[in-house]
Length: 500
Image (cartoon, rainbow, N blue to C red; front, side, top):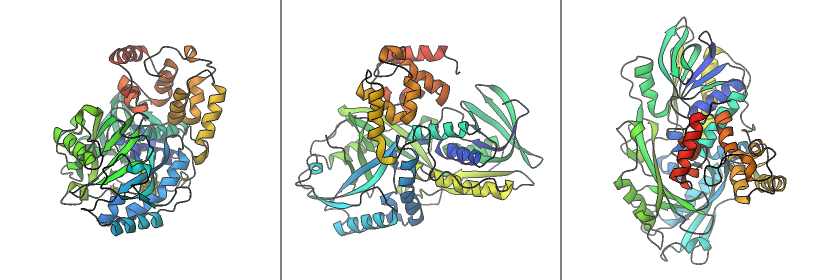
């Protein structure tokens, strides 16, 4: 962008809310720019439990609107990105000391009824004494219920929304901080400082989708006083060596009223989480505590026949959810629904502040934000994202394996495991990475595991990757598989690269 550039809409925040809003808006014909002060999805949006789900436990808190909207979105998002989103089956063992079985069955019946399922299978009752999902559990768990939700590669979901927005004409700035935003002549003048240097951009309307920093934008960047809209709730996860062989997930009830998940992760691991506790520090410093680690180990060991120990932990991650502060007494009771607030108008300069939200409802949140944008800037285009495709997802939801077979036939000289990973992360765009390669020697420098220069170059040029962390922990999860020397070589290579 040049200093004289102006846009209709400027979005602050490169998480799932910001990128979804930018994508929807530019697709309707608005001119759009977005700035993220770090990497895309570097905050809350890469620290989720990585589910596209209705939120079964939210029924207990009477969040029926949120649950129904989220349930309806499961198959919409699966169709939009069938490479990074896919169905999972969850097993809920009945714990005799906690919620009665009829309550669990009734809740799941409501979950099915509200969900608008077409492709996802319904709930069924399991005899855990006979079913394979009962084998890893303690023998006292004799009965369970199996239901459907979906998995999402959360960070890639964000990157693909940003990529599609850019493909449609949006300008995406990474590692660029909006240092000030001031009203002028019914619009906004924004000062940016980032990898392209200092810039001044004018916008007709401002979107504050900064996640945990949304109040900081109001008080710091915009210079207002007394913004206290967000309740930061910390969620932490542990990743351990694979605990069982089958492909189902577990949802475990705990005596404190919370739930945790145990989910097959990256072929060789099990993901366990999440915690729920208020957080009062800097979101940049969030990390799992010993208390949280022990909580997750203890909660999982309550159900698994073989206790889960700290020695099995391969990785941990933590994030803070920027929930709208509704005054709930406990962190797990605070609303997960999103709240949108309009500040100003067409005459004075309008801003929309986004509070809360979740991966599952991000597309619908964007549509709701566009309704507010249209109140100020007028209507342009129509709602279009339902039924659309994210880059790489140009195939039907049930056709992933068929697409993978085609990729395997075209690249028979490459390892099957590598092709599956590339197909899962890039979908049809895997071919853009592989080009005419007949074997791995054609893919350039090797950075450990199955990561090669061709993939790194794609991430830098197309997906805004800049650092080893971007490559190994957000664009992929190969950080679980590479060594320190590999990371060093990758850092050296990236330090010499200039995005094309």
